[in-house]
Length: 432
Image (cartoon, rainbow, N blue to C red; front, side, top):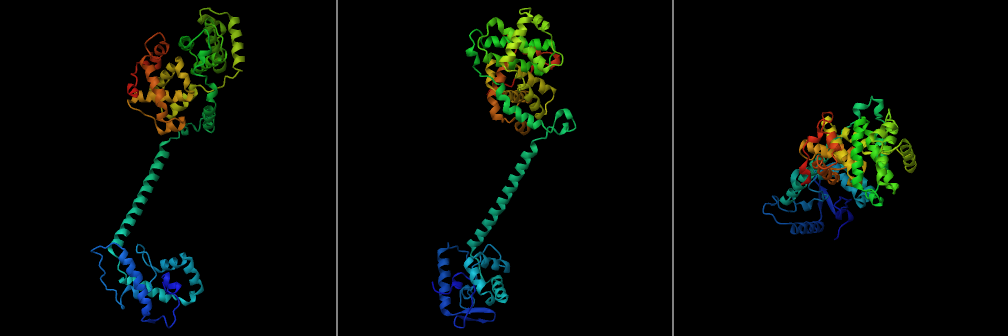
């Protein structure tokens, strides 16, 4: 189209006497410019949807039509102000360049007249433009609400993870400054304490059933000797690791392996260690002192004196603290995980997963519904979904705990000392 660059971009440019003049503070263009401006506006009106209510109250005449005023094209959803008119020119590089060269020709007085004329109502918005403006404002408002809601949700998730070590900040034995690093180290190294879940296939004279009988008996021996809880878990860990490496253990030597593993675990964990004669007596004098000491040397060398590995017990203590456990939950959790120690099939799970699953199963059993808090998930590293498979197997072990020949764990936890935890009904709903 014809016209100057300023007219094409909707900016008032310098005028000469042939293009128009100022009358009464308004710009009166020539007839040629009026026809070109009207053709542009007519195209926009024809292309827009027709609404019966979109009626222009003032006709487009030469005296009062919008085409007679060279007004910058301003978006209808924003108020026309001096600041916005200036920003509009600055945002357009071509306009900004022309305005920089000819800024002395545009006065603030002319800009004030343009803004005043528009605010007086010369520009009548079609109804569909008003609807679009209302819709855009509603979208902006809804987006703001959604952002506030999402921020609230994030805050709630962060606040739901409790600081479980805040109560022990003044306890030097709790090593609050290092506790997170310690358990991070345990999680990274727990795979070293695991054994292949099918290692019994390499044994020629023993099987998983014999292993279960041995561990069931050692749980009773551990209870009779009143040893520390850590000792039991380390004893079973030493047995499995030794049998996984030493493939030629005779059936009659299996009990000797168990007794010797308990002796080594006591030397590592206990303050007062049972003497060898006590172990000989508890095994019904089936072995001599020399046999026990020789097996001790063999096991220590086979395992390369590596006794400092994380067992399920260290994770149990941390995860129970995260679960804010009481005595009842603690006893039921240990009852469930000791049932797992006897079962060969549970070797497929890592110590931390066994501990988390035992606590999750115990919580669900006591409360009657699935329960796993954000704090437990954060400190254990396991979601409820990742624990379900292991937990269902634990419920199955709980169902048959008092049946069969391997009832050592059930008898132990069916006493007042352990709160009769074995009498609690299992969480059968987890199997559904």
